[in-house]
Image 1 (spheres, one colour):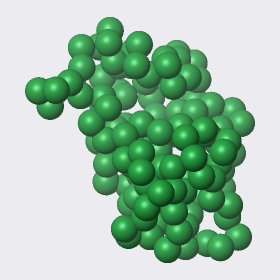
Image 2 (image 1 turned 135 degrees about the vertical axis):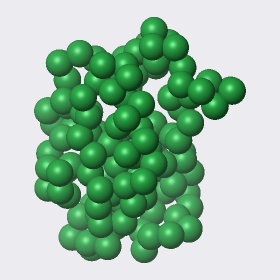
Image 3 (image 1 turned 60 degrees about the horizontal axis):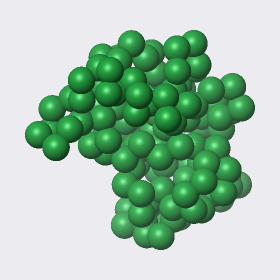
Length: 127
């Protein structure tokens, strides 16, 4: 999956941003040239799929959490983070819940280095 496919994902499914909320909202960006998120993406911070013990949530609880983000059976899903590392773990965790998700390895680093691509700010996917 590339940047164009990621940009199109929110119109046909769910694009998950697996970075902490501060980076997602655009309040800080310690690595990349611009802050924010891909318009239409939903925030799934690292650790959101695990419990306080660091282990995966039980599948039932995991599915409920994902459904709140719009991730339901039959919905196309893709994930990104800063550089693809955390998102690859999220893709594996999603698979345990029966969700087939695509990985966008270029992630926010690729997107934010292209000044022609918009950066959304705030908590809302379309913000």
